[in-house]
Length: 95
Image 1 (cartoon, one colour):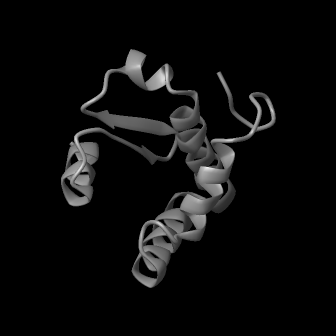
Image 2 (tube, one colour):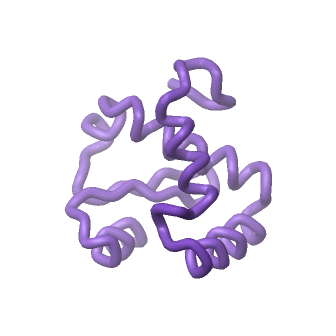
């Protein structure tokens, strides 16, 4: 439900979004999502950010930075995009 709302907001047919330790998917199967290494690593970085900041602090910071920078210049999204290029096993989480 939340991933569907986010997909509508971003005008995207596919969406993955993290809340806490859960990756919510819309328009993509689990198998399809897991086949896209970069996408998985991006979302795993968001899980790591949730753990580092805590649930409420993550949400507050994410919302504030979204307002201030938008999605593409958002520092937390930039960190997650950098994680897409990291070799497997260098992140805290990997599959």
